Amino acid sequence: MRKQTGHKQGEGITLNNIGLVYNMLGKDSEALESHQKVLAIRKQINDKAGEGVTLNNIGLTYSNLGQYPQALEFFQQALAIRKQVGDKAGEGITLNNIGYVLMQTGKLKEATKTLHTAIEVQELLRPELKDTDKVSIIDTQRNSYRFLQQAYIVQKQYQEALEISERGRARAFAELLAEKQKTQIEPKPTIKQLKQIAKEETPFLGIFAIASLRFVKFLINFTRESRF
Image: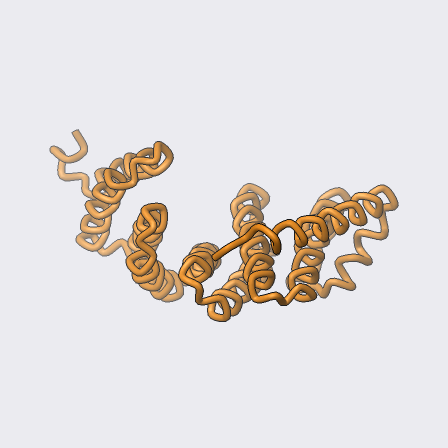
């Protein structure tokens, strides 16, 4: 119906949703076809922000298919557009995706640098977000921390991996406490500052210590078992 009425924007939204459903079902070839149609429509109606989203979705689909060079190409296009239109949240997401692909192709130093940038973008963005938008950013940042830990471990930079683990966990605790106390934390706090915030609530100290011990065990197991 939307196609018949010439409502291109609506047609693009519908095709985008179809593509995402195909992605969730693991039917990435069908998803790719839908996303490519969406890209053509969004270019036609000059929807630059939407074009950035779709390029990122195409990159994700190629990544799911294990076609990493194609994924990287589309992620880089998405990143350029998202920077152009000022989509900081999208920029952080795409940087995270680029970091993951670089890891998968063995470009660990590039991946490390990219993931650090992703985390920086996400942390600077947090204070400006509504509570409803923070969930997506928190999920993306959690992935960025996890990928960065793995990149450091594969490079046998264990101290850096442990520091990133502590920073990620401390950040999560600090966010929880800030929400509880209705206070604001700095966009780019140090690990020391984050731990200090966590120490203000005694019950969280035990949790933080347990989390750190679990990471050490994970580090040992990951080192023994992981292969890139």
